[in-house]
Amino acid sequence: MRCKSIVFCIVCSLALTGCMSFNSNETKPLNDDDYAAILPHESTDTRVKHISLIQDFDVRVQVEEGLMDLSKKHFPVNQVAFKTHEFLDYDELDATDGSRGLLGTLRDNNPNGLNPSNNEQFDTGNGITQGGIILVDLYELDWYRRDDLSGISIGMVVNDQIEQNGKIYPITDEKMKGYIEVTCSKLVNYMRERFNEIGKNIPIYIAVYELNHDSLAKSYGGYMYEAYFDGNQHTFTPLNEEYITIPSVSFTSKNEEMAEEFNQFKQKVSNVLPDTTYVVGEAKLDNGNVQEVQLTITTHGKMVSEILAATQTVKENLNLFENTDCDYRIQVINNDKLFAMMHRKAGSKHCDIITTI
Image (cartoon, rainbow, N blue to C red; front, side, top):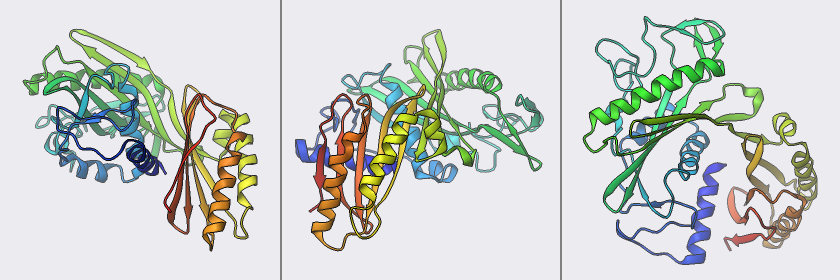
């Protein structure tokens, strides 16, 4: 579902501002609160690594999109543009067999491995493991002012548990915190020693996304810790972000009022056509507060008039959601074809809409 939000933003922006191209010194973001990409964009071989390590596209979108959002407090969108993986390329990450690269295990021939050594015991807080994989992947965003590197953001993806010898050991927050602080410091030191461009004057921000392996939780995971290194100073701060499926018991427990509003909305929309219209969603929460709601409406209209009626029903009933502190993004899909996209911005009850016909 998250991938559709990216399409939505692109289509809306092109429709409102027109299609323009810029060179690397003139890039402009799609929206005022987005980062500009440095063009022409150069894809890196790390994309293959990311796909092999985390196959779920929704999770990969959450990791990178969330990293951009969190980076805004250190790297303002109106001051920098981004490249990706200028330093941590495929070979730097590697870990194909765990024997080398930052994602590999610590060993004599891989002193920079960020996962525990096969001979090293790790206390999960729920039992002792040996040689478990904690660090899953690293995402890198590089911030530039013109041609000058101004900062780096790293998204560190970690497991919330270690599975060993058929037994699962959940990692407690305290033990994860200890691992993160040591690993972040080691990674920053490595990058500053490895690459001449990354001096101590280049701030490095690291945000840690913890995967959720509890299938009953209806959540992929979320960002739970951050670190900021600037010169000889560094800070560590807990975060509490998560993405939760709607409807679900987990979401109802987090926000009973919005869960009830969703049920009312679903009832209004589901029976507008002879064939059932399906409504599912996802919410992004920060410290328990809803930041964004994404809804997918799936219809099976046989005529344009039916699809228009269903879409108008969706738009008219968005006012059931009273919370105006979060963004609402809605897509209407009819028989597997995208028909309409809507956006209700935080602070407003006005809904922008674009249809594909």
